[in-house]
Length: 124
Image (tube, rainbow, N blue to C red; front, side, top):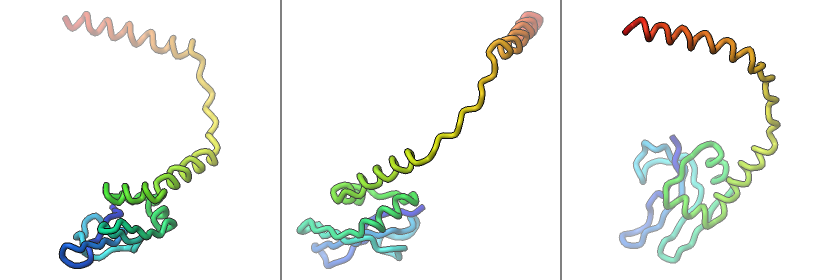
């Protein structure tokens, strides 16, 4: 599974993170598929490629909690929600199949109940 997560960089006590798309099985600071942006927690700066982040989210990538918060503050999660709504509205609904008459199904169901009752009484 692909995850959107933080990859640590920077010096000791001066953390700097890259927001990356990475395979979930790879180590935190290991290789990644694509760079999405950066996050500096010291001054709160975020630079993000919104189109790339949205592309990965549409393909099913799961963001970590921290990355989800960053994406929400940047408006990417709202964009994803709007895209999903547009896609849902654009798809025409399939016509429902014609319903069978209820009388016919009731007649078929009644004999089953009678036969089940006979089996239950004969077993006792």
